[in-house]
Length: 122
Image 1 (cartoon, rainbow, N blue to C red):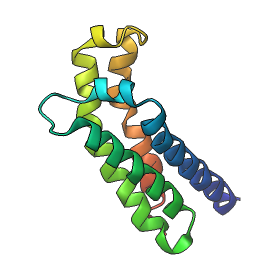
Image 2 (cartoon, rainbow, N blue to C red):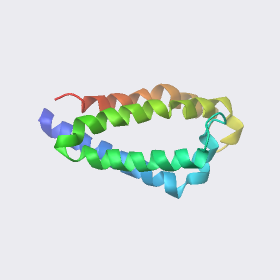
Image 3 (cartoon, rainbow, N blue to C red):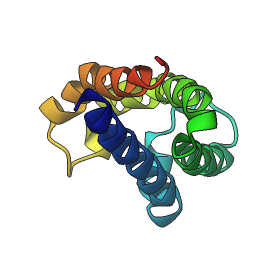
């Protein structure tokens, strides 16, 4: 049962990653607002991270690449954390999200990291 459950959650993570990657190209303007000003080439970074999310999501589906894809997801989740901090620092740019929601995103970032970490284990 545990292996079956883990497989379901792996497919859900893959779907989450692919959908998030597509979101980078569908809702680019919103994601550009999240980019801290100290990062160069914000549009390029949004697009690259979107492509990486799609690739990692697809790689999760192949058992041979699941572990490396999971580590890639963890690195990506850590890499985007500064954008979550930046969002919390400038809540006026995100009136559609309550301020408490912007702060809640910070500790919640640990959940997808742990989710992906589960698949780094044999």
